[in-house]
Image (cartoon, rainbow, N blue to C red; front, side, top):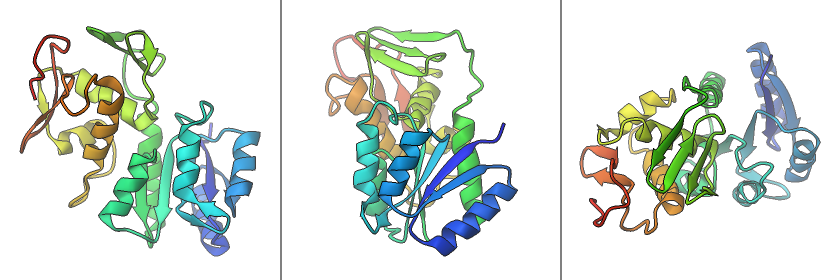
Length: 238
């Protein structure tokens, strides 16, 4: 069954070219030229992945993405953001507001296709479907793709959940950013790309009692991150 993509971009020439390219690659593609059209398409049918332009005639893609993450229907919808603004801070802001990946224009259609495939693969990780990982007050339900702290569901995007799983499946082991990206089956880590750090920060904001003094996901300076074996004992271990 083909994956369904929704592409929201006001550049008709670009969306036409990308639509043809992605359909040839086996995807079903629907295009919208504005946020209003995109919202109507989302309300009509939930796609498998959203490709969202940052600047649109009727609004800001960042605000639109933030609104999606506040709606339980779209909280876990994978979002790939496109923008002519490729500065590191623009990427970081997009990721902080809920995008799973960020691609600067201009780009090769082949790279967009590769990133889309990588994001969709992450929705079907090679994990036992009946397993629940438990770490004190935190539990990670692999079948439901939910993390719960004290029984309350943690507000994580699909990409952030997969990142948490990668760390939690190797408690006590330091993982570099490259190892994390490899485990996520994602695209190679770009020079100066701090997307892993941004997602770790978002994960900490929902699973840590004090994100500034984490006890679950710890930083090993100059090496990477480690998921703590013991998390609810006294002392942060950072």
